[in-house]
Amino acid sequence: MTTPTVFDKTVALMRDRLSLNSQNQKVISGNLANLNTPGYKAKELSFDSVLRQSLEDHVLQMVRTSDKHSTPDDPVSAMQNPETIETGPVDLDHEMVRLSRNSVEYQYIVTMLNKRFSMLLQAINEGGQ
Amino acid sequence: MDFDSAMKISASGLTANRTWINVLSANLANVHTTRTPDGQPYQRRTVIYESVPFSENLDDAIGSGFGNDIEKVSVAEITPDKRDLKEIYDPSHPDADAQGMVRMPNISTIEEMANLVNASKSYEANLAAITTAKQLALKALEIGK
Image (cartoon, rainbow over all chains, first blue to last red):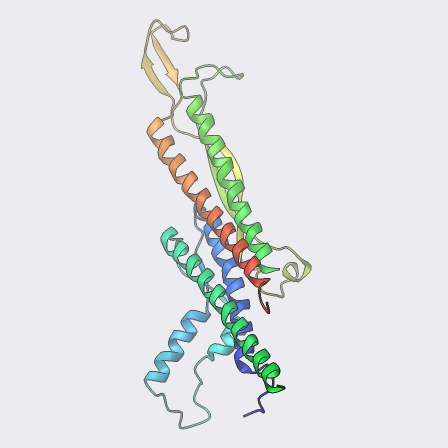
């Protein structure tokens, strides 16, 4: 455990998530632009599937009894270095849902980030009085 | 910047769909055209789309950096439809042959209208993506406010 600094892990996680969401916006834009392109396969970022897998592993309490056992993909590293995976033909409704979801996520993370900063400011200001 | 590229990709979708709408309009306008500069009746035209890798800066072009596997869309070509021309019997038509048959363009109005709806909905989808990207770019300016 590292010593907590002013900008702790939460801020770093939110920063990575914002960057992921802005990349996701690009992927969705690409899918929507190619809605009518013959042979085009829809793309998505690998983060969601890695996170889902990680949660399932967590629920199932996977136990590693040897260092040689493979470790499940880490969602944090998947968030920092996302890969695009091809799914199938572009589904308009699916892409529109992802578009709205991406937008809402981005906006609430910005709000959370600002709340975090205002808490820090509060601590700095009120402590001196 | 990511939102900038997202908007550029969506803009390529807007351009492609607008081209399609233009071609469809030309088809609909020429549904009864029996004379063209080459002497033949008008031939229906179709738009062929292709996806092209989106690269904006040097990083993407040389293969490092995220985003080189994202593709924008472009119109590959506008080709004439290979289907046979329609022949209708109308001896009073100035372009009728000796048997009274007139060769008409191979255009079905219903088919063109269905395509028009498709093109316009795709245009709207790209527009929605641009609006969202704009919203998020503005939201990013609020960080730390």
